[in-house]
Length: 177
Image (cartoon, rainbow, N blue to C red; front, side, top):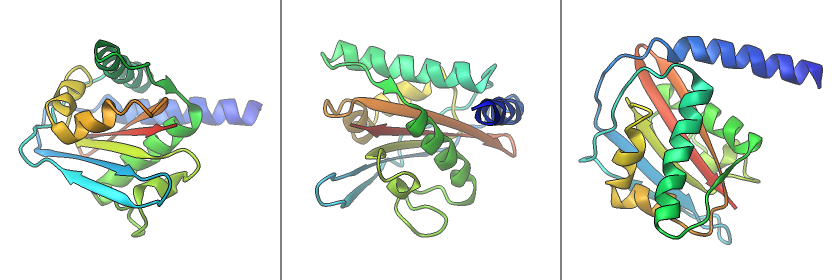
């Protein structure tokens, strides 16, 4: 337990340092995907015309929670239950955000589907490259495909991962049941 807590703290510090290096760097890359939980088939959705925005979050935890709070505001406005953050989806989202540096896609760098990062919990995914934690939810909500993932009433849990590389910030939202 102590090792796990220390590991989480060290990971947060290292990732937090990377996050603090974010600068405004707009890139036009957003993608959303869902997995059919019965057939394990994926539906890949790409919105080239939606702009993912960039920014400088003060900390990874605060930025992740702000994004989830903004998503939950949208869900509540639509009459849906809020998403509950889980450690499993947070861990999966963090892995997926880091993987986007190598391969900005719902396919993982090893060629497997996004949900294989943790097949017991991952069912929906929204990605962005270049963002502002205050504005990424708006960008996703302005995209019909991302909005469909966010507003899917069957999802009950979520995790948001943020990673920075070469002054470009990557966000992954993972959703589950």
